[in-house]
Amino acid sequence: MFGQKEYVGLALQDDVIRVARVRVAGKKLKLVKLDQLSLVEKIRTETQPQELQDDNLEDPFEEEDADTIFGLEEEVEADEEEEIDFADLEEGDEDISLDMVEETETTQSNELLLYNLLTEIDFKKVNLGVNIPAGNAIFQVIRDTDFNEVKKKDLIQDLEDKLESIYGMPKSGDNYSYEIRDDGSLLLGSIEDESVTLQLVNQARELYNGKLSIEEVIPDEMALVGMVRGNYDLEPDEMTGIIQFGKQNCRVVFMKGEEIWLVSPIINEGTEKKSFLNTIFSKILFQLDTGEVPNLDRILLANNTTGGSAVNFFRDNFPDIHVENLTLKEDFFDTENIEPTSLPSFTTAIGTALAASKAKEE
Image (tube, rainbow, N blue to C red):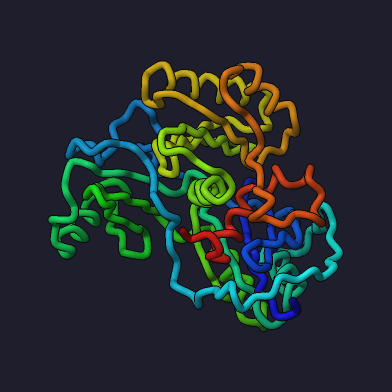
């Protein structure tokens, strides 16, 4: 048990960094600790280009009649790291002393704040997964072409031309990831700039004497999709809505089976406004009424800092739909030493740690 590898998920959300630490224990992930760090200085997290934030403006990808279903089938991959051999990891029962959630006192800078966290975890090496905050990544599925028949050189040129039309400047392979599906459609994810969370990690790296291994850089939306895939048995035709909470904005990701069906535009209201639940309800209802989302079988709440009131609200308004906080499956996550009421607020951070561990890549 002493030699077990630990993975740390960092999720920058609003004015805090949420931290989830996990260890691989056999075929389970042991949730070791949850922390919440209040930023010394607020970090501005840019969202999508302005033209894509306006629901009434056309998506540049529609010039070729592409379906504007947002999504990536798999989590965005970072540089490959060594594979975990679960057979070599012993199932342990080490008694770990855990707090419910620790609110770290502010220090002189955000870099020092993160440095203190890294040294507390391990002064020699830390394995990190970091998030790309919600709304920073654009997800597209293009279905009008059989991309299995397109030469890679031509495909890359076409994608980079399209991305230049979105962002107003050329983008390199560091800013996007794509995958060609079996049916020939193409799934594309892109970001304008490097993740602000990764930028902060790189600043803290200058202070930290140990080694930092960046195992995964993943958009919030994909971390949540990975969490649903890992913790729920999804039937191919089931429709799931994931509502991601934030202080200033929210987002809804719709899945059909294990695949993304639609990623809604950012909703510019969050938990700081009393009306935000009604606004989310109206947005979902509109997408059901227009047929963008054909039906809903379940609604899962992620990063829910409001307690049971939000769950009850959606249960009352969608009485025929199963509603709950996104729940961790017992045979996959060991949360024995974590206070259950703290889990709903840390969904994305846990998902980022899961992605870093590569424990559920399939």
